[in-house]
Image 1 (cartoon, rainbow, N blue to C red):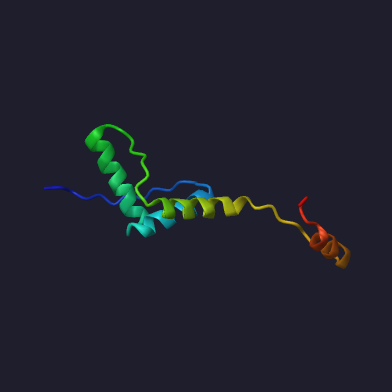
Image 2 (cartoon, rainbow, N blue to C red; image 1 turned 45 degrees about the vertical axis):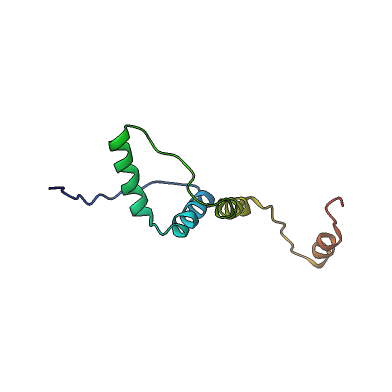
Length: 93
């Protein structure tokens, strides 16, 4: 008979990576806890650490967009002159 063990795992991960990964997990109907159990089982079964993409290209692109959105530069506007300069800047186009 299999004995289930409850284990608490804590880790640090980049927020953009976390949001992208959790988006993909949600799209395939999994929770982070279920994914971790699957990873442990696969390592035990094969002796290899599994790293593959299993979602549609559209979902993968959405996850990548989520990750990239964390790298969008921002501009602090603290005066009317700053606002006017920001709105007039065409970014070189």
